[in-house]
Length: 182
Figure: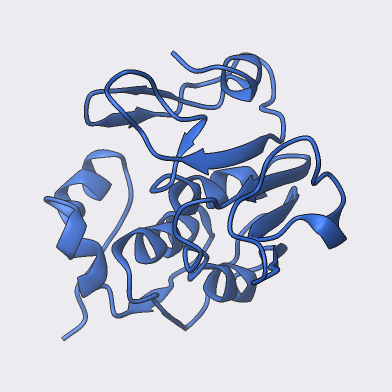
């Protein structure tokens, strides 16, 4: 399905409209991702829409994962909220570079438009956290909140509903608890 780190790390599979993160027999390992455009002729190493959704998962792994964003350089809107919830995510940005290629950029000071995710962490609840204004960033905050013990109010959750159908029902079907605050 994927080339490089995806097959080796057993992180996820993609088919049609479904992003699937399988249960692992062995602990998942940190990975080094590069985003690119997805085309019907072959998948990118990592579609540019996925890193925000994968960030909460990568934060729970033992070690350091990297995400190089090559398409949409404003993609890391979720970092502040996840860090407030206990994450250790660091953006490494060099606005002078437009594209990243491997293996030239292996050290932090030279990796432009990169997100470094150090783990493992356990997300913790917050009385209130502001969702980013984009659907993927807001969904990343929802994933982290669902994994945390306790209750977190997500302010701006309407962003999540913009891109996901039946969010409440899907969360409940997975055993999560969600309530609307008036």
